[in-house]
Length: 440
Image 1 (cartoon, rainbow, N blue to C red):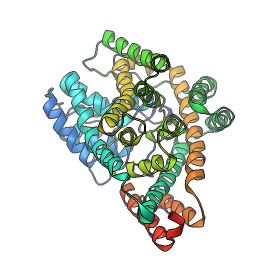
Image 2 (cartoon, rainbow, N blue to C red):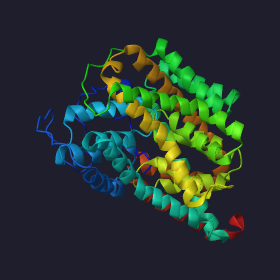
Image 3 (cartoon, rainbow, N blue to C red):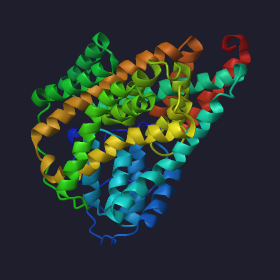
Image 4 (cartoon, helix red, strand yellow):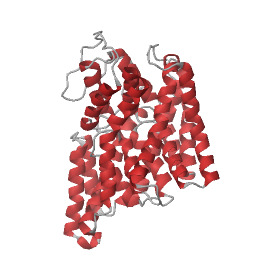
């Protein structure tokens, strides 16, 4: 589920590519004819949507960019739920918004195909397999005792170092291709180093957007037309609900003293501020759940490493955290709470923006602000690579060697993430076997 070496923004408005260009298929799969105008299938049922996305949820390894290729092959080429131009524009919308892009695209396709229940069915089916696997890992992680268990956990933490380093590398190449955006990323690093905390992260992203208004202007994207069963009134209410929860949840959590509401607030806010890729959720969640002591840094990074080996969206890392955190709610109830919280803002935004997207995406100032915000998150993720990842994981030369090897396997040899997870976890076990005292 980690982003692979090709994890560059998919027809992103800020990338300089044509959002109406034909979508690239997954490796080893034949794309449909460019500009094809084959008839699009009629609307279906929520059950049909659930079955189609359950298949995708069980088989979509490789990160969000790979997910979009799988979606295209299954739903555009084979099932013909939407044409090439409509799919490319939908992807452009979801790359434009904060949140998990592949899950947002899947939700929107389910909404188009089967109405509101179809959207819910698409999200549930695509999310369920990886969420269950992460829940099982959380419930079994406490049984990993002794040096070998500690070695496995350490190996999974090294996976996280390699994966985030690869994400920083690919995102920096795609989202900071010129000096203006590189300067915004560096400014975000300095701002976060001086301020820190969740407020500092939000300020850094907002400051990047403001800087982008002056530094990242470009030609507007061409007009488009997306037709989804969402009225402007419903869209406006969804946007209102998004803003109300973002502002109101912290106030309710403080006023009530409820730990459950505080947990929901942390995961909701993390999902609402993820620009530029799923890995950006790492520093947001680390600030929200590790700093207060709800979960230890070792458990946090081990869960993040395990999340790279399962299919489906990276955001199901929230299921692991919800099940493993203390105090409650945890277990199954905590996993469900955190999953709903982290996905809700992205789904509300897609629902809210769909009726207005045709006009919104043609505005150069909106695109410029998003380019600046995306550049800022590169700085945010780069700082997270150092702290907490490097400082809590790299303990000696052997760790450096394993992490660098994992990085090269992902970026140079383009190995599947699950292979890197298996090899790196095995390396951690081997280190514990050779020197049990270091992991006692």
